[in-house]
Image: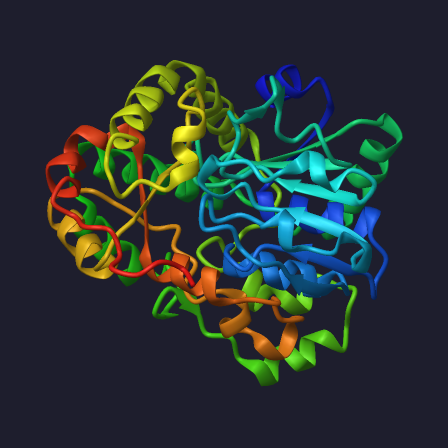
Amino acid sequence: MKLIAQRTGRHCLSLPSNRLGLYLALRHWCVPGQRILMSPISADEILFLVLAAGLRPVIAPLSPRDGNIDVSRVDLGTVDAVLTTNLYGLPDQVAAFAGKILIEDVAHAMETSVGGRPLGTFGQAGVFSLSKHPGAGSGGVLAVERESDLRALEHARDDLMAPGSLRSDLTGVATSMARQAALKLGLVRPALALMRTLGLQEEREGYRIALDPDGLELALKHVPALPPFDPWVRADLHDYRARRGAVARWYHSRRLAKVPADRARRLAGVRRLAELPTVAPAVRDDLTRPLFRVPLLVRDRDAAIAELERHGVATGYLYDPPYDDYAPAFTEASPDPRPARWWARHVLPVDPVYADRSLPLLRRLEPPTQGPT
């Protein structure tokens, strides 16, 4: 947490997950019934956190350059708040949201800056994840400008936290360590199979967890409240609001401390992947950003994923279909969902840390035959 506090210059609150931090921020700064602008391409649980806070998700048109909100096609006068995604570490146009309640999801963008200013410092709150760049498996940090907000959020966090246990902490640390070892050794396929067998990954319909509209309607009767939404929000991280003990906190700190040391390797991978003709255009805008993943836009994405896994390269972090098609009854539709559908169908997020391992395969991939319109 100290590293994030130094980077942002903000007051920081330690959390068991980024998910809990986002909910706390949404409840603290937004009022139930308000309309919040959000990207159509983001993790399943983010949508459910917005619904749990009693907010109305307004789905933005997507920019095919970076997979984030296309600000040029948004009427900000119709929304009360904005939730950024900063997909794969590519920044949203944060300056355009001045004057709105702005909650920054910085899970993918721990090391991204805009104009020399770190993401997570533009809005009322920046919410970081320790399971992304640090690879800690769990943990989050909520960064805020005012100490009075920090104290209020700390009380709200404590009210929502569930009891933890040493056994749970040890299991979480061991699982994360095993995942890191599998990535380094190229044992992705057996590791994924084991995680599914142990119930550490949810069953999915394609790349999304099952929506269960009837169950979701029942949960909505209790908003604003988080626990009724646990069946959706806890996907792949069942203890997302469990109190962490000394072992887990030690491991989180250890993994976070490694992030600066990995920066050069991550940047080198970004630069090499940026040379590919399939790379998303915004990646080339600034090659000094140590992205969490480098998005490529390829013709047969699913076949490419299977081939990469056979060669020991993990992908993941796919958000297909967009919210418009995933949960149309629970969102306000984008004015133009076509770019989001195109992006979701073709994007291939590649870990720049393992670029050397994946490049021989990636060089053979072709861009989509048609554009996003």
